[in-house]
Length: 144
Image (tube, helix red, strand yellow):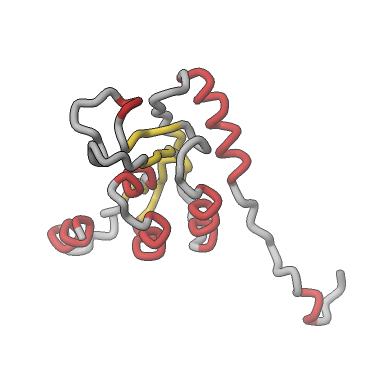
């Protein structure tokens, strides 16, 4: 609702857009895939950043002043957390997303050089090349 309130304050200005970050939505226990369905027209870039929430009965999402490794909610390298990136990339592709997939590396366990190397390959593996035609176009009677 915060984004909708902000949109109202700027009279739904067409340049009011967002950088989508599923890791922060996940740590807030929000449905980050449905978020794409709701706000896809306003998403112009997104962070490829993973996160995990490990319930433990002692602390909440950010864990107060605990070291990052001990927090219930913590950021991880892409593919090491709980974000469904196949779902994220698929939904954005369904909505003809033409923006940037930006690696925002932040991990409480892995070193940054490894994370950067793995992160760029992770993004490359998840980008979905869009087909120029449907698999059943042949049924229309054209030549193949």
